[in-house]
Image (cartoon, rainbow, N blue to C red; front, side, top):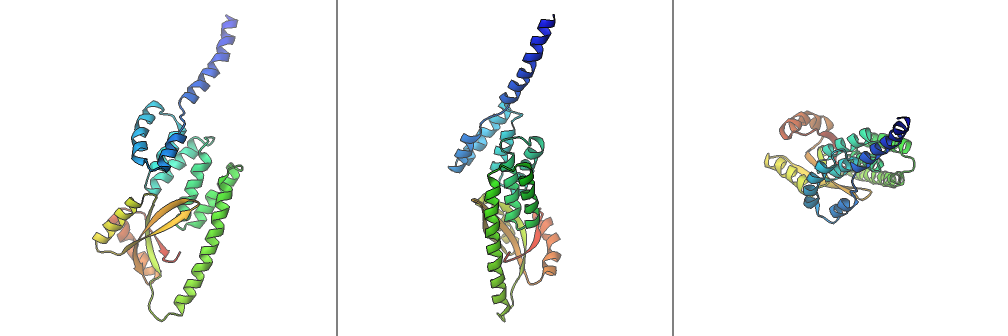
Length: 236
């Protein structure tokens, strides 16, 4: 009887490990398909994969990559990090959260993600990538300062502020929001922001002479288009 118990104690942990590994799936082939433009194909395959591997941490990352709305994608990446901090994609998820906030110009929030990445995943290759993008940010800020000096010397009235409506990796989604805004009779434009190879299409609403004008209009824009916008400088 004792012998049987000993055998059980050896086999049982192995069964648990086997079950955990069985719940995981290699998503590299699907990520390559996405890079090749087969996004809709992978979206279709993801539905079946989630049925076969309901506890897969990797599939959370894959779903986030496929999610075109930046805020929704961030929520999925955050879920992966909190639930599976030792996942092979946890540092990549944290990097993508950083990239999203960086693209929106929320540099303080992005920097907090960077600090967390360095603390929790010190060997991550994304640390070096972020360091490079930070240098680019400094160069852009220097360029913007030069532009602002030129504008101050220009006697014409300028519009310095706008409202950031959202950021999308899918340009079609960004164009859709822009069109919705324009159909409502408002000014809208899109700027591309490349963060270490990831291109975000950032949609903006309106052009305002002062921050107060933009802040007064912000609640209207948030309610009308169901967004969580923020006031920002046009040249940021």
